[in-house]
Image (cartoon, rainbow, N blue to C red):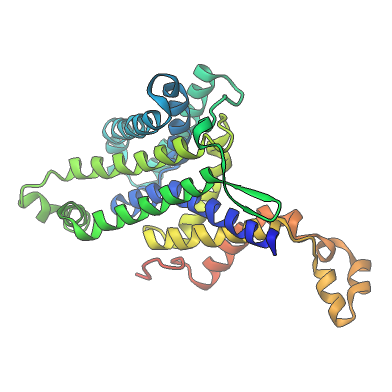
Length: 313
């Protein structure tokens, strides 16, 4: 029971981390229709900026400053790169952001080296919040989850309860009408991209201190972020949260399950036959845990192509 509770907690926290990164991508696609392949690179930049600034600004100062800096990088990318190819369609945007992700990765290696950096949790936050039997649960994990939940609430309220959210939605669905009312639609789009990039930077600054900060962290998490966005529904913030938690919990629980289909068939008297057949029937669930999110994505696309909470239209 103790290991099950710990696995559930780890899965929820990992899911909330996935949401922190996918929230910005969901926001950008939902508001602008841009599927940004370089989004996970903004997550990596957030971690490296925080590492570089931690010595002079302190941990939380570095987290805030890196979030702002990544947001400014997003402004530059949108204004001087994406805006120039937006009218050519999605293919050009995908190619541009795909190439940009490689450029950012190589720049990180150039300035910080091709190895993990020593970005760590401050000693004041490196303690156990509670114990479950013999297991001590880090307080910083709970802090990461709390930041993700606060992020979700603030973004949701911003988009649904404020004048800014009304202007953004108007600029998306009725751009000419928004311009006629005096709103600068390109600036609105730039602001949306800036906020989306900043959210990814915040995720990297917070999570990079707990997980490993290295030049491959964007690649490691980037694929999973796109799985989250597809499963949840392109452009759906609630869907991104649901899919993140679902994938996080399933992945965490499956890692600790050393059972196979042969063990399941043994309950029906076919265990020996399954072991003789071998192959997929004898694969432990823990050994294929990393592929389960992709299997879930395929299942969702077959049953509900728009995603769990995506717009059917």
